[in-house]
Image (cartoon, rainbow, N blue to C red; front, side, top):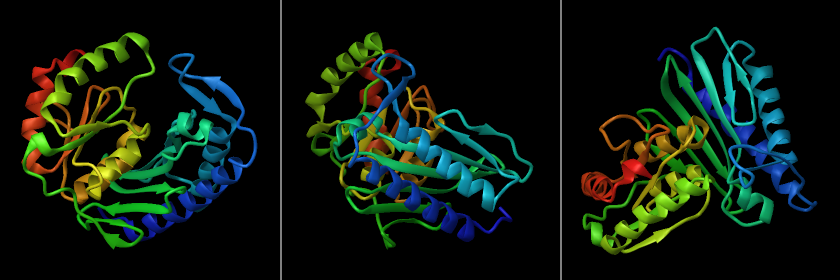
Length: 265
């Protein structure tokens, strides 16, 4: 990578902070449901759109020739080899209810390789950051994934689809997993879950059905903190599956998920 990833990260941090301030200000007003996506329970608020518009404006002003992909419809091509991947509010359901567990997520890939990521969790006052090859930080301090080696002692986070039939299949898989781990947590925002793996707040995380903006920043942060992040077949995280765990737990949890028929969840 020949681009200055330090300055790119600084831009992402500043932009995420502005968007986070905007959405926190919106909590003091009634949140307005303006649309749904995959199902009637997969919600979009006016603040999702306002946050994406702010982020798009800041990135475009600073980097007019970069590509940008955003959850709320932005899909701009570029000429620099840099593509920004944006989730203006990850955890919209939490946000709509005023429930802690939402974040602004901004990542950038360079020539197809994820280069940097920021996840700004405003209600917890936490800003997670990473540049490829430079480790991960929370509020500027280095973080590391869990050192747990026993899967039966692992606290595992997960999430569920908004599509009813898939949710039922995922619940069936969970029923087969829960007896083999310490416990399960469901927070409602993939980027926050991945950062929780990065700082050891949970030992591992898995979920099916994530879009690029859901995991782009968080997956890099978790991997830079020492976790392995991938799918069930040895590839990169994708819509089919995202699993994040420290090396000592990854293979065991992957096998457990395969045995629990996660491939059909």
